[in-house]
Length: 349
Length: 151
Image (tube, rainbow over the protein chains, first blue to last red):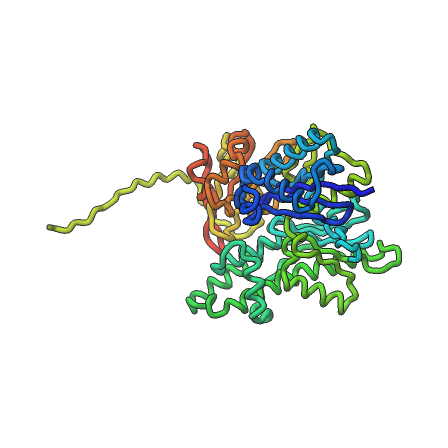
């Protein structure tokens, strides 16, 4: 029996819809120029009103691209939180109405769990490897930086997280300090490839355990540049590539050294006594410095790493659809009276 | 034609009552207490200061004083974080850094938060100045190694 599930994601900036057939994605549409041109709707911006304008065109496009009819759907899955309440309401209200209208089950999905479960999406011939339980995931994006220990599809535990800024925010704000455009993460990544990562060093915080802090790095860069700019007003312009490379290396090093610590802590959980598999999720997993560092750790230390394809690393509905699929198999359905939640852990049903 | 200079005369009203020099982060809990005590009726506090000034760090100290045990993280990406105090009250922590257009703030439904009667701590309020309710308390953080906090 094949299950077709519609996934809807509207937790923050982008409206997205995807169709999954069991664990294989048939379509994954994110509101953007493409949808705008072909189906109406507006260019995404941060606003629940934009979600309202985008949601029907985006879902229409996802169904059409999957080449199915909406009456074939087995269930509708939707992000319940965490996120911006106004934005979440657009997705959950639509999903509730859709589920009532088609008389199919409604499935609530947690955005952060979905990021992790995106690693179980199979390609069309189902040959790609997936992580083995229990495994460790580093979820790292503009809004989140956390270690999650995954014992089973829905048995997850946050074992460490940032106590202030997210890693993606550290990239973006460092870029801002240097006068690069927002979001600056991808710009830093690009310029870093041309620079010397050992040229400048920035102080790293000493945070105990598996928690992170990125707020101090921002301040450290700020002071460093202020002093250098006094001596040479063109300092940033003259050293842009080396600055980007050094900042990126500092952030990546903070992530990797804590990841090594997290692996040490969770070692022994694996049935064969091996190191647990390591997955990364979230927008910063697209960073080439982080990918390279993980590949080095794989080659040098035997880490078994899982890096998602770019289209599943940033916010998207494919991950909501795969999480919905696993809940569908369990018969874990949502209720029409469920309300979205803004923060992780603030769930109400 | 005789040239003359047109002078615009502006009146400045000093509304800040306190100026505190902060030498270390360890002093923040005490300053947080003073801020809360200074404005017992106020619920909306607008934090002005440049990138890296310490707005989030100070708000973290204030939330802790108010009984928040959740981790207070930067809302730059999420725009609004909601925390619960031990007493079960909500506290809203805003960051309008990413806002490009004031209509986005209307679309978020900012009134539901700012007129909720709950504590609201706002970073980058410059970007929504026209929407700040009367009675919002400005808190200014400046300086680099030593910080000055004015409220």
